Length: 280
Image (cartoon, rainbow, N blue to C red; front, side):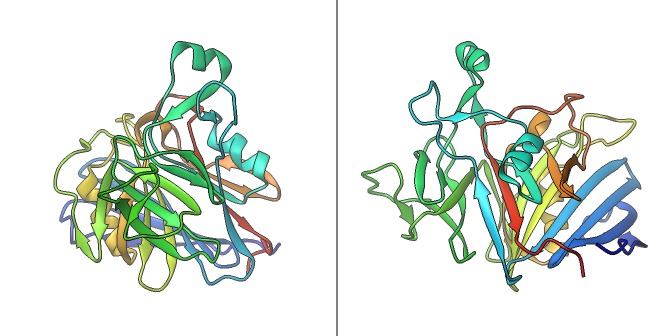
């Protein structure tokens, strides 16, 4: 693999009117652009953005599946362990989850709302009502529960779920920013956006570390995703769960700095596998 090309671009995000900093960009894999954004005004924020061209040949997605008959719905694992186990090149933490004391001992978890892995049910609709689905053809859809859902997995609009993750906030819908409140300025964020030209955006911003990264509100995340072309977006589990991982040269590395001070075992993850993982 050739050495990565790096460049730094100063920016002023006029939509926010407040956040100023600089970008470092690389192309770690074919069809993948990675942006590390350092905001320094009016507060420090460390942001990681991965833009994946879904038209790239050989690209596919993997998510956490059901743990079968074990206690809970999934086996909890860190995003880095998930990336290593599935041999993915990129991974991001997924939706919200809960763990009882027994589940912590057993290493399992229950998801807070709908999840499907490779067409197989993992968790039915629950507390959260917005889902992103990535089909076997990499077609991306955003759905909500069907009004007369009789199975726990019916959607509006009706689709066949394949790799589906729920989120707690629909940030952007058909080009319109929906995020108005929530996610205080100290909050670490995880989000996924989708562009009109068929690209997926993985977004993680660190928070709760005032001398390193303060955090972002949901609206600030939405505005920044719009800057990168997102017309639809959803927020995943943030806080101490917020983790973005990349595996170059076969070794998985956490790109951000999780606010717990260490990596958290989470209920589910979303990964990207590129059959041709060399860079341009």
